[in-house]
Length: 268
Image (cartoon, rainbow, N blue to C red; front, side):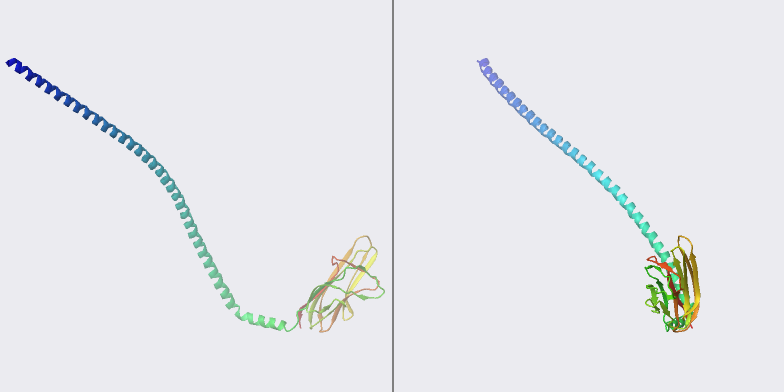
């Protein structure tokens, strides 16, 4: 009886112990599963963080490259700015030297003006005196007709191509210069001929009196020329002209081979 009572008790103990073992094993299995799940999540998070760190490192390198390039550009710009600043300083110094030279020259000019203050008055008076009389100068070419003469009588040559006629003292219609004031005048004239076996001769006349004569003979095919000049003391109203001598010829064309000129050297 006693053994029979103990057996069921033992059986109950074994059943209870087995139940406890199954509950403990199930609990351990659940804990292990949770740990692996958490480890997996931690591993995934670690991988994600590594990827982010790698990207950040790449971005940091790219940023560093841009910063380095920017620093290089800044260095170039700073070098250029430094060069320009030096150039500006040199330019300022050069301008300063030029300013000093200009100031020195201005002072020299002012000194010369002061030194020449006295001589200026007589010169100005002389200029005013000269303006009381007309300024006289003329120069004219003969014409474009080619051969002129010979004629049976002495003929005044009419230099019709006027180049200069200051004071209007020369008359191209008559070929005569009339002195507007008493004074000393300079006159120049020439002769030119291209025809073969032709004598050429022209004369400078003052009030119908010959003062000079040019003469030549063209004895072959070609041309000849001669020129001369005179300084004459002329009274107001005196006339001066060039005369083609009797029986002689001259030649002129668009090349202005024959010229009659004169001007007032100074009044008296």
